[in-house]
Image 1 (cartoon, rainbow, N blue to C red):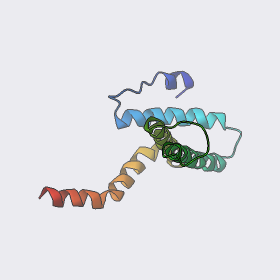
Image 2: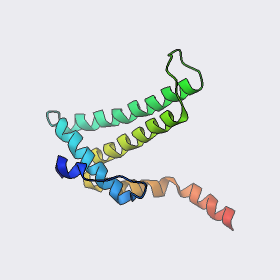
Image 3: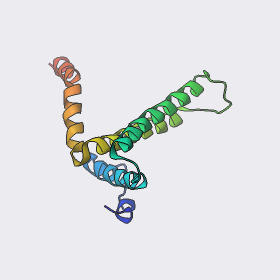
Length: 127
């Protein structure tokens, strides 16, 4: 997918997970071409680091919200939410870097495995 096609992907309140993965693929391709001068393994490592950076920004906003920082910036839950979504998007792009086109299937497989106990608890509660 080229940059023009990537900008034509609309993300709305009705976007499906499949459409989101399509957008992630396009964003991943744009990011990868910007880092084309770097070795593939370094690109993967840098994108995993981006996940930590975005999560750190969410934590910084939370500290500011709770008055636990000396900076004068005001923070609110909208900023925390924005940074959390940034971390999720960075993680999805990192999954695409690591797993290529298999990223959505790997994501689904791992979510299914990691949510087993919660699904079992819901079944017990519903019984």
